[in-house]
Length: 72
Image: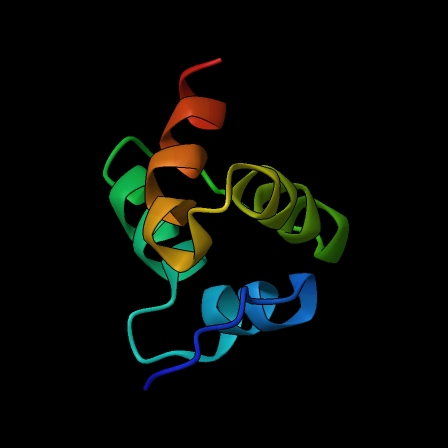
């Protein structure tokens, strides 16, 4: 039997900031070619984690949610 628990907000933020393929770094690099500088505050990272927790999608949805925010 395998038990799976939902990730906490802190764990989702850690995935955004501490993994090898950190999402903020990837997005910053993709905007540099447009000569735009992109920064993520700690509050912004928590705002990305919130909807993922509410939807129950965990880390899988973080990139998509960031993309939606960027388009707005």
